Length: 131
Image 1: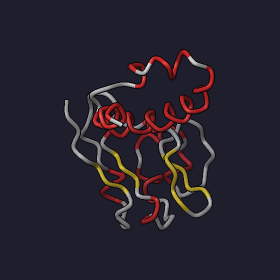
Image 2: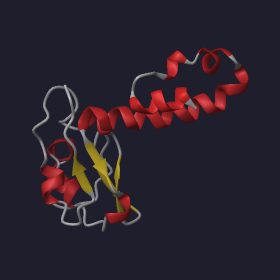
Image 3: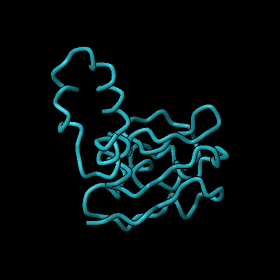
Image 4: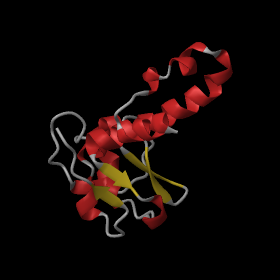
């Protein structure tokens, strides 16, 4: 349990638990943990938190995201483009994060807040990130 607490607090990494990587019986658990912590690492990097339960599916986040518009000019016009390389997409009546690594907040630029500003439902929250 102590390892789990340290893992969640960022003091330990998955790689610190060698049995996860060395013993085949843990392969499924390792895959699940890697998926969970991939998202957590991206949130730590960008500060973007998406509250799906608050999302109304209006698509404002998709239409105003500079990276989404750069991927396809049709997005700015409200067309439901299936372009690749987008941050957000509306699917089944809710916005979804497709690829957070495309977000302008990845890396050193932390000033973009367009999606949060235009989300009238409060489903997108930008938390401050250290660094």
